[in-house]
Length: 193
Image 1 (cartoon, rainbow, N blue to C red):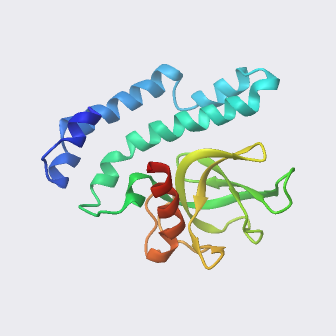
Image 2 (image 1 turned 135 degrees about the vertical axis):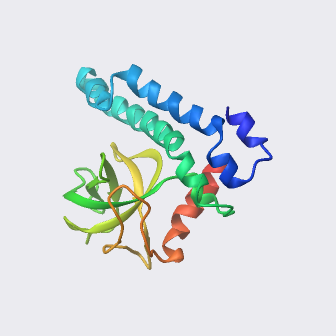
């Protein structure tokens, strides 16, 4: 299905509503069902041996990233013919639910962020992030920072994250400055190289 999308001559709106995109989404949802349903990741983590929990958590985050990227494909295609690599990932409005200092790095904070249907962990170097901040989150390939897996990155500019982002939780943020996407764009471009 990916190959048929890559070599498709369909226009964006036709591709968005194509059977191939719908089939990819259905297959991703079926994988979630086979894994055990919406809370599959908790089950996997709870069954992991203690000495393998960190590695299991990172692998779970990678699988979730892949599945979420497939499931969100139609929404990103619906944005139209925008030639920007930042649209290859999901960007969501969220609310910071909790913030704790990183246990192994005093220059990092660990944030639990509500994206509506689920929460993600974001490790950030912005030490001024607080509970209830309304943020934009780029959902990136998971990466461990001093043994804590971060599932994304906050949108920001001038060395600070955006803390009053508008939009429904889990939806694309509204009215964000294009400049706030620069760091995400650079990371996606480097990842795709």
